Structure formats: C-alpha cells, structure tokens
Amino acid sequence: MILTTEVISAGQTNRNRKLNMTQKLVVCIAVLSAVWLNGTAVEPENRVYQFKAIARASEDITVSSTMPVRVAKVFVKDGDTVKPGQTLVQLDDKAERVQMEQLKAQAEDETHVEAAEAQLAQKKVDLRRISNARAKNAATELELEHARLEVKISDLSLTLAKFEHSQDKRKYQQAEAQVDRLRLCVPTSEKDLPGDTFKVFKVFVSRGESVDRLKEVIRVIKIDPLWIDVPVPEDVVDTLKLKVAQKAHVVFPGTNALPVEGRIIYVAAEIDAASGTQIIRVEIPNPKERPAGKKVFVRFSPTARSTSKPADKKQTTKASAGQTRILTNRKGTS
Image 1 (cartoon, rainbow, N blue to C red):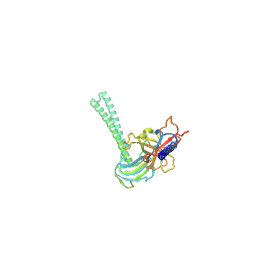
Image 2 (cartoon, rainbow, N blue to C red):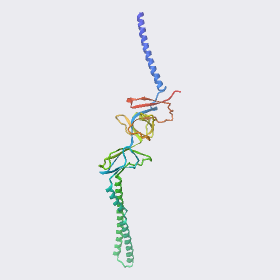
Image 3 (cartoon, rainbow, N blue to C red):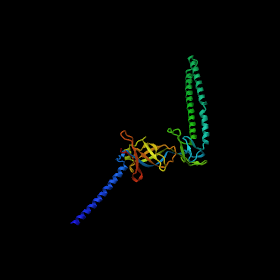
C-alpha cells in the first residue's frame, strides 16, 4: 500500500510539474506579447498597413505618324529630358508646304470681294438714277424693275465672294494643320504646369527612314510625379476609409532615404472579385528622377480623428505571404 501510494504521488507530481511548465510557458508568451504590444490591445483601425507595389510613370505617350512619310530630322535621343510642346522629330513636309503657300496667297487675296463690293455700289447708283428718272416719267417701270434686280444680284454676288474667301482661309488653316502634324512634338495638356518635363524612353526611327501610318516613332514618359497602383484588400479600404486626397507614404527599398509622402488620387469604383482587392492609386513627387518600374512599399494610415491620441511607437509585423505588413500604432503606458 505504501508503494502504491508513493507511485500515485509520483504520478501526481509529474502531472503537476507538466502543468507548471505549461503555465509558465503561457505566462512567458503573455509577458512577451504584453511587452511587444506595450501592454495594450491594438484595434484594426489604429494600424498602419503596408503593401508591395511597383512605381510607374504618370504619363506614358507613344508619338506616331498619321500618314506614310519619310523622316527628315530627329532632334532627340534616348534619355533626353524634354518639355511639353518641344519638337522631337520632323517628318518630310516639302510638298505640303508648297500647297500651304499657295492656299495662303488665296486666303490673303481679297480682290474678288472688293470687285463684288464695287459692282454692288455701281448697281445701287444706277438704281437711284433710274428711280429719279421714273419719277419724272423719263424711264419705264420695266427699266426700274430691271435696275432693282441688278442690285439684288450684285448683293448676292458679294455674299458669294465673301463665302468663297472664308473657305480659302479655312483651306489654308487645314493645310497649315497638315504641315504642323508632320512636326512631331511632346503632347501638351491644359493640366501641364511650368517646369513639367518628360524623359525620352525610346526613339524608334532614324533620319531618312520611311515610316508607315500609325507606326510608333518615339516614346516619352513622365516620371515626376510617379504613380503607384496598389491592390488593397477591400476590408482594409473600409477600415481605413481610404479616399482621394488622403495621405500615403512610400518607401523605396535599398535606400536610407525617409519615406516619401504622397496622396491618393484615385480609388477604383470596382473590386476585383478574384482577389478581393481594390486599386488605390498614389501619386508621389519625384524630383530625384527615380526610375519607373521600381518595387516600393506603400503605407496607409488611418484618418485623423478628434478623439484619437498621437501614437508613440511604431513596429512592423509581417502578414500573409510577406505581401502585406501592418505597422501598428501603440499607445504607451504611463
């Protein structure tokens, strides 16, 4: 009986030791968690979420020819910095310029209009003379009616001359536009700001080469600002209430530079059903001309609230597949 009692006591002791070890392990995990979280629980709306994305050019333009033509001059090379409206390539426009000069001479010639005006003035003088003669019975009613018709015909001739002259001006403007189309430039926009620049990404033609209609001639990109399209899970979009004009921060890996502050310029109106994500477009200034195509991290913070207190500390924890990180704002204990 004593042996049995001792054996039972030993078993209970072993079980107690295992329980104690388990309790200690749980306590250790709880303490570490408390230290890591600084003693407070973190609400989802107080987190700062970080996502991987790729920076791209804010504008990517391929300039093409609207007609088969020969390349006369190329003014730029790959990598050059150009401004909106700057000439890139001059296509052969000799025949078009000859036609334009001819139409310009016609548009500036007002002889036929002046002749029609003089003829109308003369017919009006004849009408007054015949009207006076008719009042004195020195002219017949038929002669008076004929004079009136002559004035009306001359007036219509003047109207026709003015119309033809306006058409000559339009033909000249059309020819001028055709010549201008053969001068390939950096496209301009009403949104362009002073100091905006583009980079020549690729020149596809050389001097003397013939190009086909709509064949790409040159490609230019705008890398200041950069755009970043970030696929964000819909629940994160709802939690952080992401919207246009809200701030975001972009980190370029491999550099010691501070995060670049940008802003949301577009929130997609549709959620991708397959991935459950919504595209959020962030725009950041790029005065250092970092190249497009770089992999970056984009951080989204919760919107400021009147009841919230400033955060003391930020730490980073990896989320699923290493694609999303959560940088948590934690309140320190006092």
